[in-house]
Image (tube, rainbow, N blue to C red; front, side):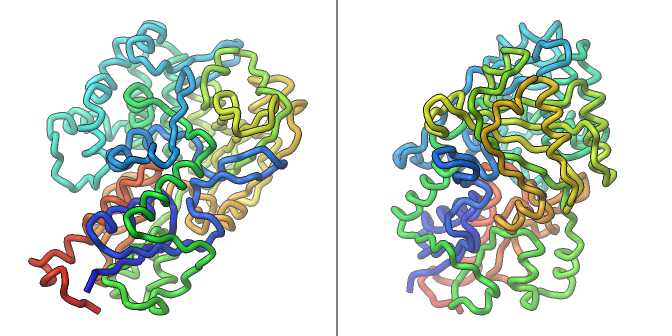
Length: 481
């Protein structure tokens, strides 16, 4: 009899896991609670008709640079990456902006004398991106395939963002690095925050920070269609309340966070494993706003029109104070804001002559504070007249985000806190396996963590397949209940 597998959740990791299992010859069914697949990688009309907004993720350095996604023929299903001229821009109060160029040589020459230091930090990994990514996007406990490369990265990985930024001479370069590191949701004085800054900077030069033509749904659609070609299926509007209610499958992979996994299958686990899941900690939340605009964002620094992603926060110290405040459970007066302006480079996102934008700031997990005024003040600070361009807006509190994707617990878009303790053992020392032999977890709550790269699902599915190997469980054609 053919082996069967069930995947709960059709986010990028769930779909990646399903594809790996289908490639191995299993009959795979994916159950998705929402009306459309994708999780945080969905595109919806959130404001006005004809304005297409990415509900969650929008820009994909790790998607384009994913060792697994890049191995799939996703372009055959319509996926097309669009690159803005520059990956990211960072405006400053003097009316100029620091722009991170995609070409590493151009970036080094533009960084105010910090080119040699920037190159020393990132160049070895840019030049060997695929070797580096295959190791960096696995559990830290794995034996690296490229030990010297990873050892070199490890020399910086535990440093704080401030420690790394202090290697630069220019306040402009330090501000740029702060914006990259703040994606971690860590305080910029914390260990590992520097590593996340590097993990944003390196792919900017190696593979870019592209957007999918038509929105995030294009990536999800390509994954779903490839899975269908392999014989798998995705059933939307199919919420699973308990794994015990499902038919017997040889493998059950769950693209959910530990809280949902406990609800789905807690009574199937040992008491020790249940305690580990209950102790899992979630990170800060996001307060997000989608905009329908009458015109492009009116940046004071015209260089910002070259980048799909713009970081708003001023100096290193200001961004550090914002992120420190959030980590301490407070709401910053001047939050660090991440803004994406996809319609500048993909006109399919809005009616002719109109535009879309998307912005969020970090807030304490589960926050109920209305950050709209503070968020828009930051945009206006660098783009005076922005509010006059707004045709409509859709505001998402952390609770609103969670209501549309239950994995976004308290608005946490990273699948759980990524401080040192939880980085090493995420969500437990078992990583993907649970104490129930046929149940695995494959969400961003597992290594390597958040980011649309599919590697959590890929790694989990590979681990699950080992349990079905002849050496572990007998013939692949035997029936296992």
